View 1 (spheres, rainbow, N blue to C red):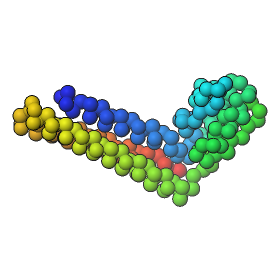
View 2 (cartoon, helix red, strand yellow):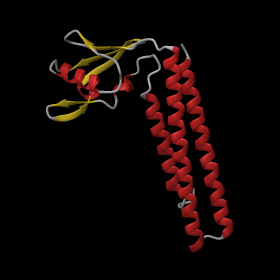
View 3 (cartoon, helix red, strand yellow):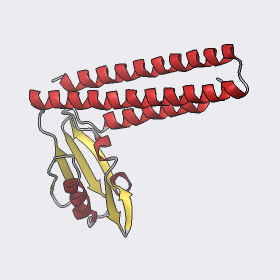
Length: 183
């Protein structure tokens, strides 16, 4: 790959990875431990991820069990879950916190699919902005050190790369939408 367009390809890859992370946090009626990835608790004055202070498991399809290694962390973890936008009230028996996910209604599934498409479109816009930046860099370089043929070839390479990433995003949108709409 040409050194002029290489950093832009890296940025596009990061955009895809970011979208993948966002999709992992969208719950589709099943319990997904990744839902807790962005939550932090106060562990002796240090913000720590829930994964670093507790054991997280999925004993049933719609239940996440969180078992803190220290019993004093139960209140902290509950506080973090309630303060988040997960929308699920935790229940605890003194040793284990359980998050029970309700069955999604058809209306809620459709809302989630809209959200998935909106995030996908935002990723496509980011990819297109990166393409524009790459083309600007090529134009700048063509004035200095590239021939017209080389700059045209590079612009074509950038467009092919952009098309590849847009297609990947479309596939991600389709697969996540199907996952959400599957009852």
